[in-house]
Length: 114
Ligand SMILES: [Zn+2]
Image (cartoon, rainbow, N blue to C red; front, top):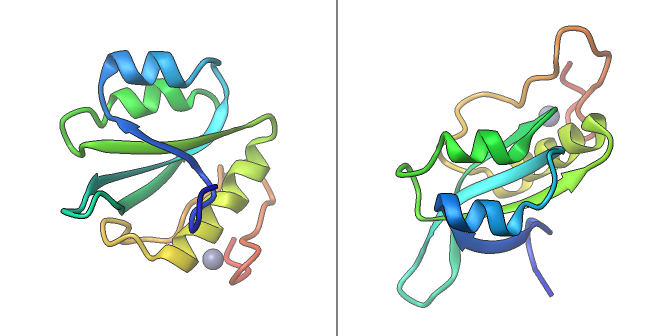
């Protein structure tokens, strides 16, 4: 039972662990973070990929210790989840609102940003 972001994990942010946990090439949302002294996941950053969350996660190896993720068939669902986490968890490394691809008409379910 995960409380908070609703993402799976957390898992170590290593190549082996990413390959093991993220089984498909898919759109998805991920969170990066560290474990606090009492073993709780502290989210630092939320991001998404519209095509391959596994590949994007690997670009962050070394920048955080742990990751969480969720795959989505529909990139728009991934965008909406990313927005939700951005607004509710306020990860401190996220300086700007999640961006949609310029070719899409998606808007944020929380603030309506497009
Ligand atoms: Zn928003």
